[in-house]
Amino acid sequence: ELQKKAAEAASEMRVYQQKAFELKSANDVLSSELERVHEDMQSMQVEHEQQLEELNKEKCQLEEEHRRVVAALQEESGKLQAVIDEQLAVNSSKEKEDELQKKAAEAASEMRVYQQKAFE
Image 1 (cartoon, rainbow, N blue to C red):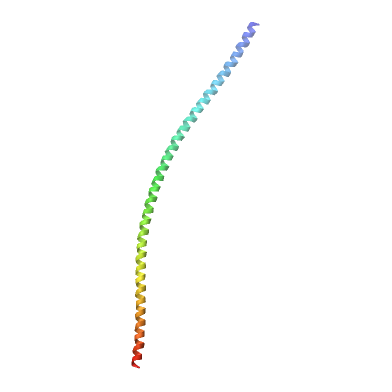
Image 2: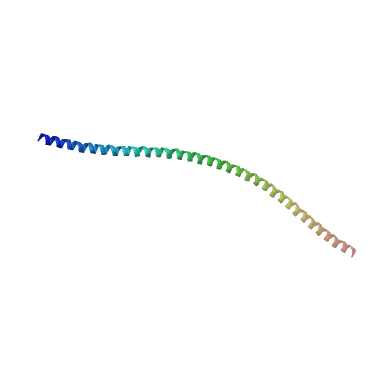
């Protein structure tokens, strides 16, 4: 009877040892997997930080280029406005000249009318 109980206890002990071995093996696999996932996450974080740094540099470059383009456009706009103002002044002078020529022609016409009346 004692031998039977000892045999059962030994059998149970082997079952528990087998379960303990299986659990340890599963735990080792999960620990290894967790370590790999952690390394992947660290690698991804470094990669994302590098991408963010590159994007920030690109953003700064684009902002600087935008400032240069806006400044160039403002300068060109100022030049164009000066040309427009000059052209308006020329047009205004031309209009005044045309108006004076028209008045001179009217005055000459009136003078001929008076001269004709004077000879009559």
